[in-house]
Each structure stands twice: as C-alpha cells, then as structure tokens.
Image (cartoon, rainbow, N blue to C red):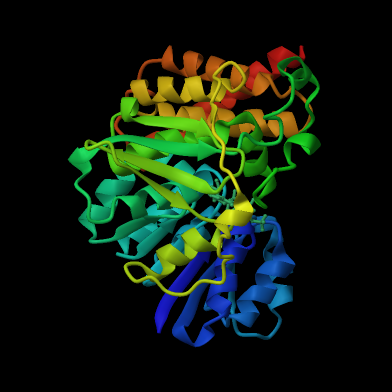
Length: 390
Ligand code: NDP
C-alpha cells in the first residue's frame, strides 16, 4: 500500500486528490490530512480515509478538530509546526496543495524524508525554486508538477533533451475580465473576479487568474522548475483552456498538451507517474470543440506579466517578495481596501521598496531568508495599501 499525505486536503486540489484516492482506497494508506478553517470537512475526510493524523494550521481550532474526530482514534494537531511534523512522517507520495507561501515548509520537509512531492503549491517554486530542487536532489526525492501548465510541459518533455527546447508557451484563460473594456476594470469587484470562465478553483487562485498574477507565478515557476531562461517562456491567452501548454523544439515542432479543464488529470498523472492509468476525466470530442483560439497576452491589461519578467531577471529572493506582496494585495482587494488595478501597483511598489533595502533580495535562498523576505514584503505591501487608502 502506498502511504499518502495530502496537505491542503480541504481545498479544491486537495478534494480532487481525495476523489482519486477514494476510487481505489485499498491501494493507499493515508498518513496525514491537513486544512485550516474547514474543520468539519477535514475531520470527515480523516475519518473516511482512516488517516493517522489530521492537522489544522489554525491553533484556535484544535479543540473543534478534536471534537469532530470524536473517538475515531485519529490524532489531532494544530499550527505551523504541527504541519511540518506531519510532513516529516514517512510517506511515499505527498500532495502539496496548501495555498500560499505557508506550503513551502511542509513541502521541504516532505522532500527531506524522500517522498515524491506532487506540487500544486506553485508558490514553493516561485519563492524558493533552487532550495526545493537542491533539497529533492540531496534526499533522492522527486517533485512532480501538478499545475496543469507545468504538468503539460513535463509530459511534453518526457524522452526529450532539454537543450533542444526553443520555447515554452503556457496558456491563460484570461480570467473573468478578459473581454471587459480596459476602462471598466476600475470598477471590478472581488465577487466578479472570483467567477472563472472555465475552471472551478479556489477563490484566491480564481481572482489571481483574472489579474493574471496566477499566470505570472506560473511563468516564474516554469523558469525555476525546468531551468529554462526567461526569454524562452511566454504566455498566450487561450480562452477555451483546452491546450494547457506547448513546448517548441529546435526543429520547429510544437508539442501541445490538450485536455479538459479538470485538475484530476494533472493530479492523477502525478499520482501514477511514471505509469499512465485510467482517470475519470472527460474525453474530448474535437469535432464538437470546433475551434481553438489564441490572443496576445497584453501587458497593459495584465501588468502582472511584466512584473513576472522583472522577477525572472532579478532572481534571488525577488520571487518570495513578489508572491508575499501579491498575497497581501489580494487580501486588500478581497477586503475592498484597494481596487483591482491597484493589485499590480502594490506589488510593483513593494518589490521596489524591498529591493532598495540591501540584504533581502540578494540573500542566500534558505528557508529562513525566504520567510524573512516574505515577512518584509508583507509589511511593505500593507504600508502601501494604507497609503492608497489614505
Ligand atoms: P483552496 O483555497 O481551495 O485550498 C487551500 C488549502 O490550503 C485548504 O486546504 C486550506 O484550508 C489550506 N490553507 C489555507 N491557508 C492555509 C495556511 N495559512 N496554512 C495551511 N493551510 C492553509 O486552494 P486551491 O486548492 O485552489 O489551491 C491550492 C494550491 O494549488 C495553490 O497554491 C494554487 O495556486 C495551486 N493550484 C490550484 C489549482 C486549482 O485548480 N485549484 C490549479 C493549479 C494550482 P481550509 O480550506 O480548511 O481553510
């Protein structure tokens, strides 16, 4: 039986992962399931899968978790340290699907114990790509991408020589506002931004799709994950979200990964890798699909893409700063403290203020330095949000 842990089990990716595991429960032994606020769901899944331990990231919810687990015999724990402890428990395959930089420390710990890490948490690669890769290498662990674009690139590269890669194109749906006139974006609300045209995802990533901060993170993740230079990576708007990514080779061939907007494909691919096994995803009817369209990813409409290029050029801990400032800006937008178009303003200004303070962006990429840069970026982003409100 394969030992499995799911970090972020109560979220969109976590639930899709449990859906796949639940279809073949005898093949897996669930070690740890984690969540934060959704205690009833966490406890119900821990009982259903007879997990060894259930962990909430929120210490104030430990008693609720204990009560919900009742006399099931399942251990309960809470807090950031408990998440890392759960990640240190031996497992063969670990899903990293916590949202935000909070996913980094448990992911690193899972790599240290040699697990195959299915990485949905793109923030880990954005904040600390070199650290993730070196930790995996040092402990004989592997990282399998779960973001649909990176899974698509990974699949297109199987058996290929990386030196023959000319370009990688990752596609973007364009999110909720792709067809809005530019001048209307000033009135865009969080509720409107959270309506994704194609994918059913968590609230934060859906808003990040509308602003293209999600795509910006993915551009940076592509550079880090595959070790490609930034000039080989581009984003293209593809409203149908059927092609997830394309890899162009030196002979002009372009290999596309095509599939329905269902994260269970990428999760299932990572779960069964290196095998391919049947997955409960829709089979595409190309004739019914009719046509696939593509548009330029306009950096005036989506300044996050321009900022991603700056981060790729800056390197160091700029990804950690970018991500943390983006997380705070997103909190500010959800709380209606700033407008949609100010998301990029906050991130750009935070990057500039942290860059002006020596010893942060250029510090060595260690977990402590990443968390320091993350902390400072949040402080700067909060200051900027207050100034905007002022
Ligand atoms: P959700 O918001 O649906 O779920 C997030 C999960 O993380 C939940 O289990 C949540 O717990 C938990 N969580 C939230 N905050 C913390 C914290 N501070 N510490 C520990 N756990 C926390 O997110 P998604 O499933 O949509 O996304 C998860 C990750 O996967 C993100 O990095 C996202 O970018 C990436 N991703 C998602 C895709 C998708 O289709 N959804 C596609 C590709 C990548 P609770 O719900 O109990 O509060």
